[in-house]
Length: 273
Image (cartoon, rainbow, N blue to C red; front, side, top):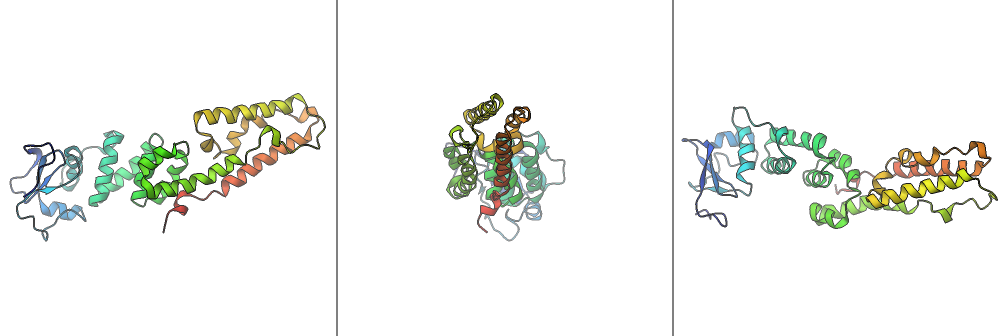
């Protein structure tokens, strides 16, 4: 006998999925029964029970809510389904996980595209976790750089221990670049006996940029675009002040940062084969 979900004393019948000739009954985590047809499930899913699996008239308990099941089941019947792009991120990510779990390919692809083009910037960590779990390597590489501002504790909570380890290895590359950034005492221009006001202005602007990025918690993300990161520094003109050393220094620093960024391994290159 099927055990009732904890805290529920009675089941409710789904209004939309209550086929009189349905031959399998699915039970959502919140106690809603979906009476559907095995043939439809088998033709649209590689996991849902087909004709060969006997349920002996019992309910098939699933871990998804009635809202999520109600959405994915619309895609196994020849009727207009709901528009997935109208779903909030919280529901869409649950639908995406359920579609992957039950291998409902039409829903899987729509969800993947929506997460990649619509939600990845606002919810990069959750999208990265989804992409890692289901082997979407291109999505991993696109989203991973946007998670560099995330606190490690939060990354562990969302990604889980296995993918968190990969994330930390990916992040370490950017931490190493950050640690290689110059400080005022590391100007490497001891042979220059005299600097001019604009030389100091560049350093002040550079320190301001680094400080503001650190306060926002996104200095690692900023490093991904060296030209943008240092734009405010190199915009201060030194050519009229006879200090070629500083000009060369910042040009080399920018070139070095570009080289470092191009050498960063993609997130998917760190994932196990």
